[in-house]
Figure 1: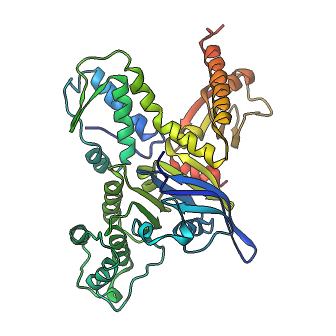
Figure 2: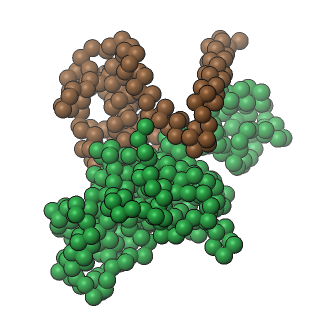
Length: 292
Length: 136
């Protein structure tokens, strides 16, 4: 079996005795596009920084390409690309100079790709970084992370400042990276609709843990809204298994459940003498339901 | 060619596979019709390429699509009977890899996993039997 591009086992991080993340285990396989969701301050950035080896774990471990990320050998570093939340561009340089500096670190630098994308994304290479808008800086940061054709691309809120056109262009590049099934992307975003389009795996960071992780399709099949109708009136209590929320309204109720299965809820409906209608939820709904 | 709504709540793979199945069954997509490449379809709809690849593999196993080396997938000429055993086992490969990985992370050995698999197998067997029992 091939080594996963990234794998964590019981990973944890505390700053000055305060737990930021605990008991996080995951793996990222070639071709995966992982969408990382979580409220502000949930620990997404810490999780990505642990993956990148910017900070040592307080517990457990995380490996990239089979090496501890905190002590990543040079050859493995060359396979990694990242876009930090705060860009690390040098104000005094022009975009072209900044690209030159980064390119010099990588033997595999794809000048043609970077030049072509800069043109398509309307990044003026002769412009000094100091004078660029936040959106332009973000595009340049993404270009810099793509230039050496990394096998694993990690992006922390890469599209927060991009307009919808630029965001779509960015999505296309992510698809291009992952399309041959040999390279992977992990990205955090508050733009849930982008995650919904692209991700095949979802990580939801909540309460300092990976509260939910797995195949996106499994998530959509697992968390659903049930519309409960009772011709003979609703029972006083609704013992519906795995309910996340219950709202009653006369003879009907809506219940959001996790770990839905046709068999289990078929039996429940029969026992309670009610009719159940299943409504699939969007990722945004699911995210909101998990944070009630 | 397809209408995909990523925000509809129905998984994209299901939307796509059902549309292809229906269009093939209705003759809207004639046998031999070429489908877009995985990359093109993914970029056109801004969706995950793995989703497209999963749908193509699933429909190939069902006999709806035919794969041709180095050429586009096409709508199958004839609805085939069940695909050969080796092909079907191959479909399991990604799941098996996932299982083994998870087991290793949990520090379980082969015997533990085999035992758990057998128990789950038997449980789901019972469940599907129950489902086949006609309603009163």
